[in-house]
Image (cartoon, rainbow, N blue to C red; front, side, top):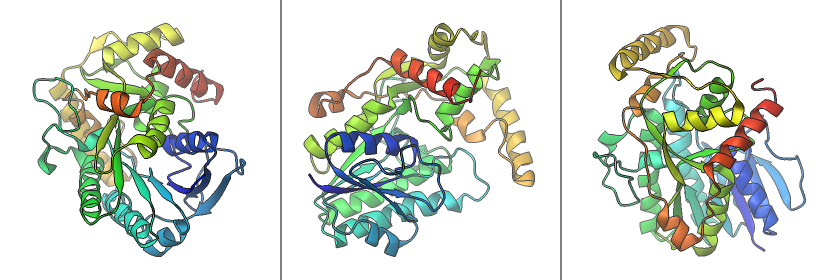
Length: 330
C-alpha cells in the first residue's frame, strides 16, 4: 500500500482521515504542529508522527518525501482571530507550500480539503452544488476568504499538471472534536444550557467519519480536477436543536432572535475583542454567515464516490456522548 502524508492529522477531520487510511492498510505519515493535542494514539501500527509547519516550504518538502499521495486536510478554522494574517499564512501560503512540495516530490495524487465555505450559495435557498457560481465578494470573513483563495491556488497547480482531487466537507459532527470546532462549540454550548435563543439559519450536517471515508474514496475513485461536496442532510438550526433535545434531554431554545439586533451586538463585541484580544462572546463572522442557509447537494459524492450517508441523528448522538464522556458537558 502507498505511503501517504496527511496534514492536519491531529485535527478533527484529519484524525479521522488517518484512522480510515490505517484501516485500509496504508502507511501514514501524520503531520502535526510542534505541540498539538493529538486525537489519535501516539503510535498505531502503520503510522508515524512528523512535526512541521505549513508555513515552511522546506518542512513540507521534507514531510512529503517518498510519499505516493498527499491528503492536505490542515486548515486554520477560526471565526475570530486578532491577527487575520495568521489565517492566510496557514490556509493560503500553507496550501502553496504543500502542493509545491507534492509536485517537487512527484506525488502521484493529492486530495485537497477545501470547504463548502469556498463554494457559492443560491439566492433562493436551494441547495448549492460544486458548480454554483461564486466570487471572492461572496466570502464572509477571513476563514472563508482564505479557503476561497487557497482553492484558486490549488486550481493553478492543477492546470500545471499536479493531479489533484478536491473535496468540500460541509458541517462535520461526531466524536473526537477536541478543540472543539465552531460547530462543535454550538453543541457544547447547547448541552451546557448556554443557548437560550437562536438565529434562523441552516447547515448541512454530516458524520465526520463519512467525511473521512469520502477523502479515501476521493483518492480511490475521484477524477483528477473534479470537486466533491462531502455532506449529508440540510437542516435548519431549529431542527438541529429539536434533534439535540431528543438525544440529550436538554430543553431546546424556543426564542428565535431577529437578525439585525444580533448583528449590531456582534459588532459591539467585535470592537471589545479588538481592544482586549479575547474571543468575542458573539463572533461577528458567525452572525454574518447565519444570514444565509448553508444548504448543499452532496449527491455527486454519493453517486460517483460511493460516500456513505450515516444518519445525522447518529452523528449528533455520538457527538453528544463524546462531549459528555470527555467532560465538555454534564
